[in-house]
Length: 408
Ligand code: FAD
Ligand code: SF4
Ligand code: SF4
Image (cartoon, rainbow, N blue to C red; front, side, top):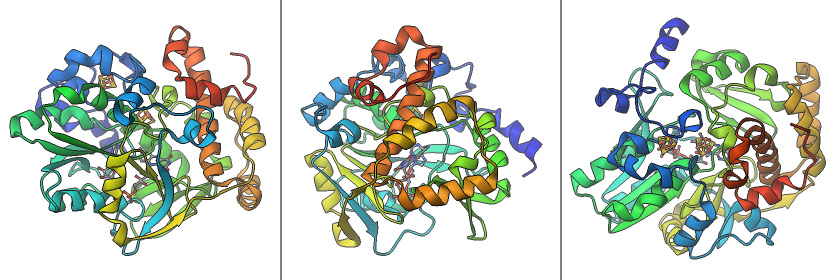
């Protein structure tokens, strides 16, 4: 698709807004520029937005108590960083799901829960016919529909816009797949959905963008933006772009054009402190695991039962932690702030050195959390100073306090 045509499409609305004759910008979004477009406000549950919206009422610790019967132990480093959990592990599917983001653990578990009859529907995100990266939230009723939702749509996605369909369709047992801001709003209203059983399968999430922001990222960073099928910020400190022909293009983090990219991230994501999806029952990501493996956080008994359903299909190993992230995080704070870009040859060398001696496993995950929380703390302090105290959860405050931040 030509760039002009694509950009024109991006400025149109997502299909859910469209189907209701509402355009984004004309829909009600009480969180204004901080809105992550979680979709709640496209439904009658907008009534609860003041309480439920992650950006109007930060209440992760309270919702952790409701969901897991306790909030995280701030004196335990793993809980401070990764939230309430019973265990963490690294896993991969023995037979990966073709076309999934990683090995397809999310898709496999969702299909299993549906076929076993544990749930009657699965909230997940397909893409529109016109564009592989424009999200189309659905309630899947068949494994085929879940499989069609595999792979990340690396853009803000109004997953909760389908909530009203739950009541209409009479669903009583539901699995929701989603990222932190969507799950916070969902947890805040879950008692009002009339469900008998809700399961939540979360993924970590950071640095999300609008569809237009994604286009700018692809065009600024990849040599062939139109053929990118998916990408990930990897543990080897490079962005891996997978192209239509199966080839992988690797661009070092340190060579990213940060001066041009600083503004592409959505303000919601620059104000977000729920990177690890603290309110899901089970979280499936990658950043705490060795390269090629997925990182699994079992938060409660429900999450443990969910994981048990597919454990026969997985290779499993324990999580590890190596290196010391702190100096690298401290150095990255002013570099990011000033939008410094290294020439590509220097970035390649820096990437190789850091890969060899840098943080691994859980320490890499802490590196990523520290870097994003310090950046986001500065963003909120500079742009929404009046919200700072209420909006930053105490665990994030404690993490940020380990570093020296530049003056606002
Ligand atoms: P698949 O089987 O391919 O399934 C992917 C599932 O994700 C699908 O069911 C789909 O419904 C859902 N999905 C796709 N796009 C979205 C979206 N925009 N919003 C909500 N749900 C969606 N993991 C990390 O460890 N560190 C990160 O920094 C990180 N950032 C992420 C950013 C985004 C925007 C997303 C969506 C995920 C991120 N993840 C991150 C999670 C990781 O990339 C994988 O999604 C996860 O490991 C599951 O892989 P899989 O192969 O099992 O998923
Ligand atoms: Fe509404 Fe969700 Fe946006 Fe908050 S983030 S304003 S709940 S759509
Ligand atoms: Fe939502 Fe946070 Fe992900 Fe942005 S980074 S989409 S606010 S969970």
